[in-house]
Length: 54
Image 1 (cartoon, rainbow, N blue to C red):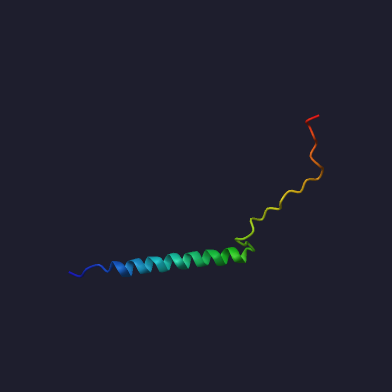
Image 2: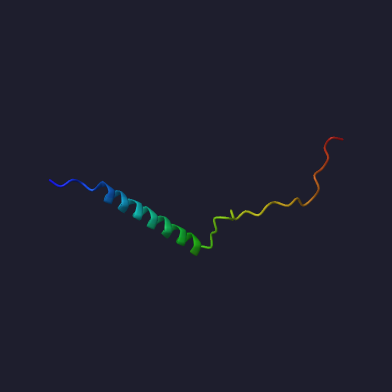
């Protein structure tokens, strides 16, 4: 009886994972998403903070 080739199975699994990750990265790039920006704009204060310690 032949022995299972675990190294081959592991390599195939790693390649599948890598391919899936790359496809996800490309899909996000097509959507205009960049990993560096979170898409939020920092809030700027419209008025100075009121001093409530009067």
